[in-house]
Length: 240
Image (cartoon, rainbow, N blue to C red; front, side, top):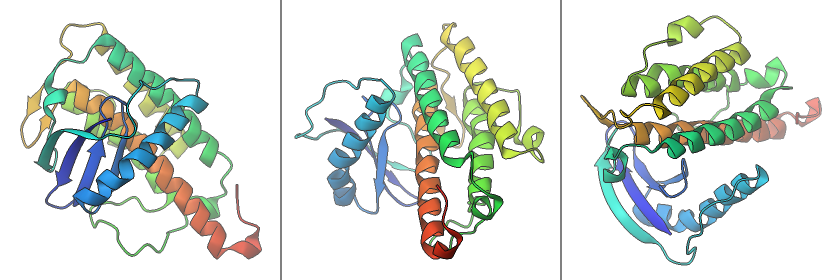
């Protein structure tokens, strides 16, 4: 399997290992050696997730890791990111986003307010991350798509301010509708590179992988919060 490594610097830290042959797959660990150890098992989980949704992953040698590129910094891009995205890459991203959104909604749709608004007592949490509760995470997922990722490659529609004050379910619906419409339109034009260089380097390919990864990552964190809530509140009968 081919792996791309990213060492975070600045406010974020640790290492991400990406398999850019599997759109949106990444895993994190505090050190380079740890993240490489995580890759095979986490990639198996990702491929199993695809299979549950009736999707087939590309064949790879799971017993051998080949490091394609290593980068360090905050919002940096791999060389792979700087090539134009093919229309089928955008279509694949849209398919994966439908799967991740289906799982996300299924996980949270019946949660009571007590769970949605429970503040987990985790010891480490970035000061700049204002999303701790499940409700805050859901709102963050919605606002980040239209307020952070898409504007990097030319989107200028809905903003986080437009989403403020409405239920999280409606925020997710509106934001995703805009994301889908923008990506469908983008797949039909020749300008599918759109490299933006300011305080960071962004491209369509980078946005595609980050969109999928972002929702999968927060789906994982929400499931962790639900498990931890159930552990500390057994008398309440827990929640699904």
